[in-house]
Amino acid sequence: MNSRARRIVAAVVTLLTLAACADPSLVAPPDITRAALFDEVWHQTDLTYSMFTLKGVNWDSVRAVYRPRAIAASNDAALAQTLAAMLMTLRDRHVSFTAGGSSGPIAFHATGDGAPSGFDAALIDRTYLRDTSRSSAHVRVGMVASTVGYIRIPSFSGDGWAGEIDAALESLGAVPYLIVDVRNNLGGDYELALDVAGRFADRSRPFGYVKTRNGAGHDDFADRVTEVVKPRGPAQFHGTVLLLTNRRAYSSAENFTLAMRELPNVLTIGDTTGGSSGKPVARELANGWTYQLSTWVEYALDGTPIEDRGVAPSIVVTAPADPVAGVDPTMEQALRIAGAR
Amino acid sequence: VKLLLVLSLLLFAPPILAAQTTPCGSRAALTLAAGVSQHDRADASVSPAQFEGRGGEYLLGTSASIRGFCAVASMHGGMRSLTAVSGTFGSERLVDADGGLALLRPVVHRGVMSLDVGVDARGSLAATQHSFADAARSVSTFRLGVASLGPAARVRMNVRDARIDASISSPIVSLVDHSYSALWSGDERADPRIVSPSTLRAANVQLAISRTIGRGVGLSATYTASALRFDGARPVRTLSQSALLGITLERGGDRQ
View 1 (spheres, one colour):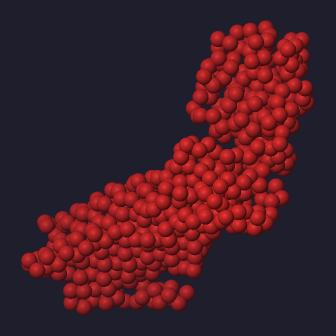
View 2: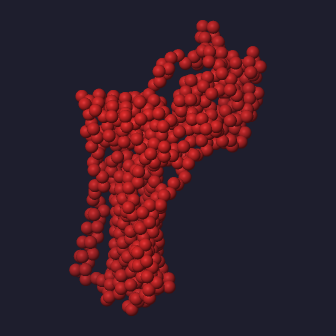
View 3: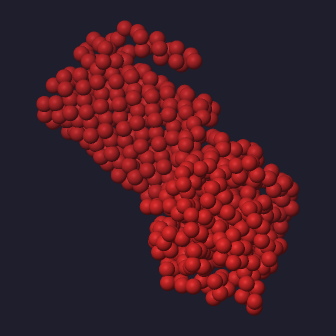
């Protein structure tokens, strides 16, 4: 190659390298005016949210009501409150709005959420648990009668701690009855909940199904996906499990309850779970604000949606705990079934 | 359909091989290259913003002359970190790979220049892990997979001891699997949909300059660019460019 050709080749390579480092604009930069932020939240919710039909929400009407309020918002705080209020019309605990920075999420709370739950963890520890030395970071473990073990799972937050259930089961020994208490469990990680449920499964069993939103229409869903609980961990507990639930068991705790309910050695006692089952995904706005939306509808095997209905127990006990008398009626019922009363 | 008909006629027409003994310029060749790439993406499933970033790019290419055709296969990809071009958004990690197989036939040969045309079957897969800027630092994974078929053309030019190859392809029918919402571990099944150019438009361009430095061994500098516009319910725009330097091993080359 002569020097001229060499220079041409070098120039072409340099130009192409520079071209490879250029920043082309593929979409218009995000707009952060009040109207644009409102439209983005409304439109993404319109495209993403999975339970418009189930909850009977007319999203176009919601837009007509809240858009003028958003545009008229006097400051960012007022705009955030308006956007949050719009999302709260979905009446879904998995929908939340966070106005960036150190702000906490604004989430939906039903009218009854502020009422006492009727569950008193301290009462259980004080009155029923004989020895709590087996407890670990995520579970409260002990014996409540000579033949009845007790495991309380206050939350399914985090991941990778299902092994604590293995340790708890090992420490309790070969008890014929085990009370598993998920009352007031607000949920957490779906996979973790199923991992824990797998500690009680004799074999793979379907327990429900989900349909995930996959199109612009409010009723566009992908094919149903069957939910299956499978044996997990080094050993499974095959004695009788008495699962305690109440209205404050939400989300992954409900997935857990739904899965456990299908196991032949499990009896559910207490009150119906909270009925909050959406699979949330995060979305974000150009000003750093974020929000979460449910993307699926979960059903029991008989086709009943879990959202707003919850998972009903086999034996209903709704009477609240009485800390003065030192009695938890749901625990008492479980102990009676276990022959310890 | 007309385009496919024309391509079919070209593919099955007698080859013009007056001055070139093999359609690929050699019986077989293997290219290994590495370099840098620039990625610009706007995927409405993930975020309303455009993200961009650079990272390493690796390419493996091979070609072989088979019965009057030049079969060219290549695969390139890499992993990179992306940030939003504007606005306050989270960050992304992109893992992508792109592979293609083109079947080309020489149709024009004049002096040092030749023109090949044919078809290009191409597949690409991009997995985007998006870390949201929320308090929980939520992380979601999204997928875009495209398999496509379309016409391809290549111009080759010999300039003294260097060879310049410029090729272009564009799909006319594609199969697209695009995450509508974030993937979850319980259901990572593909949901492919056949789309026409009215929904998916794309172009792949490659310019390579190679020079023989020894018997059967050459050095190459390659620039690639891929642009995609997908107008599904969640639109996607991407532009990927890379500049690569590599080594080419040839067997039975015309220039040897």
